[in-house]
Image (cartoon, rainbow, N blue to C red):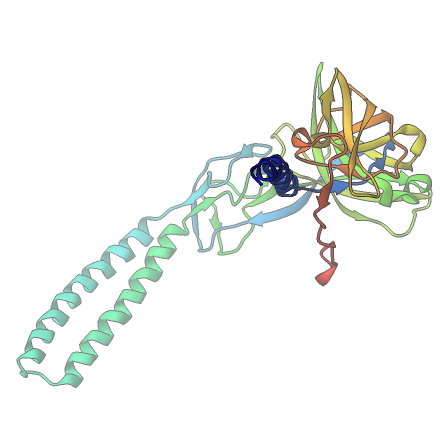
Length: 357
């Protein structure tokens, strides 16, 4: 009997060990991953055309009040900054008007204060107190109007730009609203160029616009945004394209300047040129560039690829190792192992609610 018990003990230990082993296997975590598909690389070409800079806004600037011109601070062709003083009117009479009303206002303010005390002592009626208060408010409005007129004797630049013309001289009289200056607002410069029909037909394949300004040996490139394209050709079978500067250009760019306009055009996808995948999906193994490819049984396998080392950015060009049908693990690749089973995180589908995409 004792011998039977001794024989049962090893068997029991083996069962316990097997049970623990099974528990360890089932408790191993399963990695959740996002996958992506390789996209065919695109061939792009650049086309250059001659363009001309033009002002988007030509503004007539004038005083808001009438008077005699005291001083003009700018001349034709000068570049001015927003808020810069351009001209002044003689403001003596306006200052006197403000001073006179200010004296009346201060006196009436004191009278209203005295009337209020009398009203609180019930020595005057509520009607008398309200009349005095209303008179003070009315005089305050008149005072503010005169202060505004005094401020209107100074004319400032509304934006950065050029003074195209000066229409009056010092000592001349001007009415309110009369155009003192013709002003070119360079914060809204546009570039016009003409495109042939061959480019007009593929305008939806244009992926970017820029322009280059050359000054001596130096050149400056500015990114541009699309504004409009004429739907009909002119007599020379050219289509007018209007672009705007993405950011305010330097003051060296002026209306009438000739400028080089460049269009970057996508010629389409071609699988022969390889594929693009996210840079975060690539890892190194034995000095090789590799990706994890998801198989049908939800396991992953390592795939050696060849990448274009001249390519930089969030996307990497793969020239060899993919055929475009694979599902590639896009993140967390360094924590995975060959043959490991993974769970795919489903990406939310893009919708076009409101026409946003």
